[in-house]
Length: 233
Image (cartoon, rainbow, N blue to C red):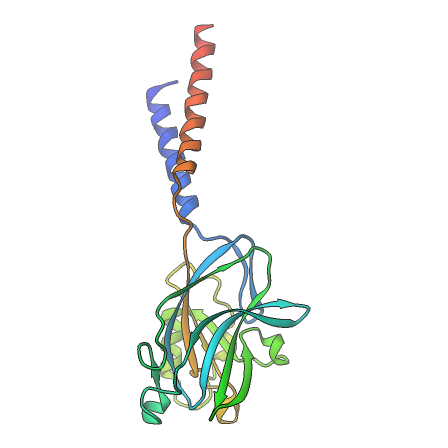
């Protein structure tokens, strides 16, 4: 085989392996219609902040026949806020929520949702889901690119996030800078401000494996030997 051609094929194989390893699995859905991936996919979640007098925990639920079952808790508030009613009952990482980044492995072709369960003065205040159909059709979460959605929430001047209907899909941003997910917990007469519990999510690329590289190079070596044998014959 021509040396230049062999070098080009080698570079192409390495690039293919690297790109394949660094690209997250294609997802069917990551938004208010549910969470479903075509392949196993690990996602890293980070707590951003919370607001309100509720003490809440965010978990991942598996959905079967419209029934949501908790499979993993991501973040739990140890108290309702950092400092009582100050800053609209604001809670921050390291104070209200103690845990840092959390990773979860979503399994292929399974249906999931995020669920926010809350307590008020020790009594259950209910659970809202990121999948609207599980809330009787009511949108209780917004999904969007981290920067655009964060900016839009910050610019809202009323108690109602008027643009909520525009933020229902976080699939495109999951591997491009991260997706912001923000809930309304139905407190304060379900005011729909969508600032009660906010997290970010980002797809974790598959690690590069030596096995993948070995297979790629092995194929090239075999092809070169076959070509050399034909030339000699």
